[in-house]
Amino acid sequence: MVRPKKHLGQHFLKDTNIARKITACLNKDFTTVCEIGPGTGILTQSLLERENLSGLTLIEIDTESVAYLNSHFTDGRLRILEADFLKSDLSGLFPASFALIGNFPYNISSQIFFKVLENRNCIPEVVGMIQKEVAERIAAPPGSRTYGILSVLLQSWYDIEYCFTVNESVFFPPPKVKSAVIRLRRNKTVTLNCNEVIFSRVVKTAFGQRRKMLRNALKPFSGKIEFEHPLLSLRAEQLSVSDFVVLTRLFEGKG
Ligand code: SAH
View 1 (cartoon, protein in one colour):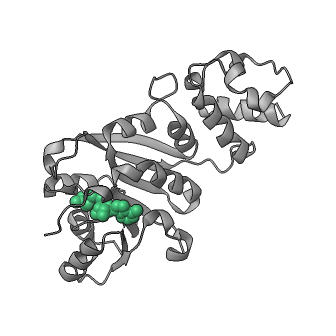
View 2: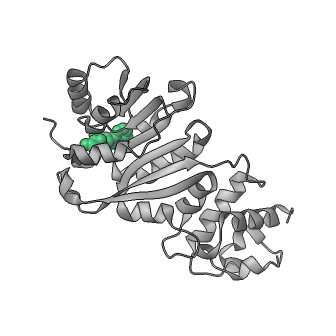
């Protein structure tokens, strides 16, 4: 038994059927997989049942969980690392591309997704269990009230599916929130056709004042210049990824 630690977001899944349902969301073709926060290994066990799996790297921050995993799993395909996922050098750990899975520590799920974005060209697919509200936000289409920064940035590079909702009762200890499993599949986009650094700044600034018309919310970009564009009369949540690209190009002087 590993005693659950609240500050590490430890809510261990108790139900092996749910564990199988989660790992089944990950495309069977991936042979190299990384699991974030395996805890006591309920998802790990299910992943090891895959015949075509050639390597499974576990990244777990908790010393006690790592000791537990080392004493319970002997499969030669496993690499068990005691490390903080957010500080791990993924390109050093994985020479080629890999799929990412986990019952994420909910307190750092947004940071995990930002790290996925940085490494998007080596991560073709992500299956993650996260807080239900965060899953809904990430999957939200433009025009919806929950559409936000992560929705736009992730949807720029990934096709996103909300897979299913998971009840509190299948965890120990039960979290205070409902959970959901979400799948991200890298889309075909190679470039956004605009300066990507400015693009993310535009998205973040626009949603920083999401109730304002973009003409006002994006003042830091236009400065004294009066840009004219119909999109500037809308609010951030009404814009698609390609609309944000149009605005970025406008501010770059390429519009
Ligand atoms: N996958 C397990 C545990 C999920 S709880 C299960 O489904 O039962 C989240 C896990 O993430 C915990 O084991 C916690 O120790 C681990 N964790 C928390 N922060 C982490 C970090 N920064 N890097 C890696 N693992 C982390």
